[in-house]
Image (cartoon, rainbow, N blue to C red; front, side, top):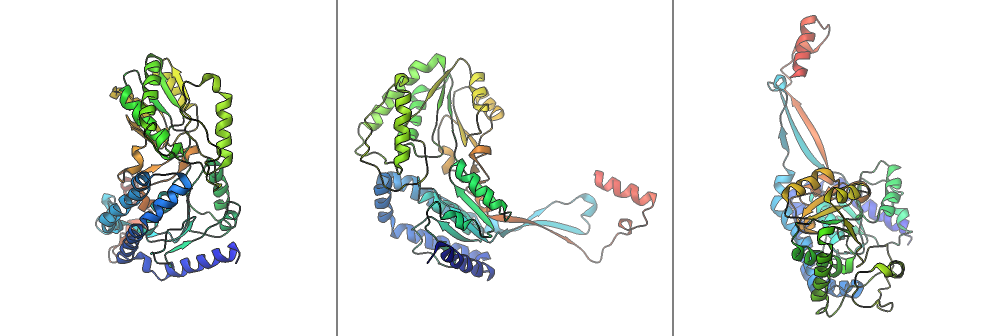
Length: 437
């Protein structure tokens, strides 16, 4: 059966289920969370094994980063779902209060197509899926192999090549959520425009840490080394892409960085894998081009130890270090580049921290850490500009998969003649006064 026929079947099932209204009920949504929880527990070892084979992830990393973050999401929604679904009363102008009430009702969008990414295949499939179910939608997910315990009417899973994905974008959908590169994001955005389909794009981009002269160097180097080299072998959208260091601490920073890397990597039994031969070759070429200016490196590249799954490009464990004379120079450099998904500021100067928040534009700002924003359900996670559009996690995930519909109710037995023509001078004055207030 062709992909088009399979997608049409999935779309028909998803649409008919949504039209029954079952997905709007609180009990239905909670049932999906319980099924998801059972599935994660039942197949946890299988997930460990698959993530190790494909990406070289240890059991701890697979659990801590992928499985536990999904559990964190559905725990939040199970606790807060009733509150999120409740219509929210809003204020109205004083001259309408006698007869009018207003509220905001969150209604599901309908059929959501989720494009996942390969670097965190479980997390980036299930995390947006949880938010979409929370809002009462039915979902078509590409790719995933992790829905054995969930209701098939709610979740349809389609595996497809990158070329075949173009077929999926020809159909009318109610929402598309995509984690990918900016290049893929542009393709999806162009296709979605034909149907005016709303989008959320998580596109990554270059996230810089900035090391101020007042930074705690030991803490900064350890936290950056851990997320850049040990977390999924650098294949993470929130990982640092380059570092900006104040010239006063450049030498001590590089020395401490090397020390941290040696202490982390030396005891490691295994290391992450790359899923694309092309990415590996590109990284080797980059190293060859800059070999005369490499501050230090650990280990050798191994062409034989690569996974055969070929997907999209991603950054690896190569980290340029740029030296600046002052923090204004650092901020100007960040502003001159496409907006990143995050800026990581390492400093003990709180005034400078506030300046970074005010003078740079990014998906998020993290002070004295890197990557911590992803695990929080209380703040929006997403990019801006080149790094994406829209955000999710917690109530922000509920909102992006919902239509927030305004509902206004006016009492039928209270009518004010000043609203109708002919408009006298008195009527006009009263109406204008109402609008001004």
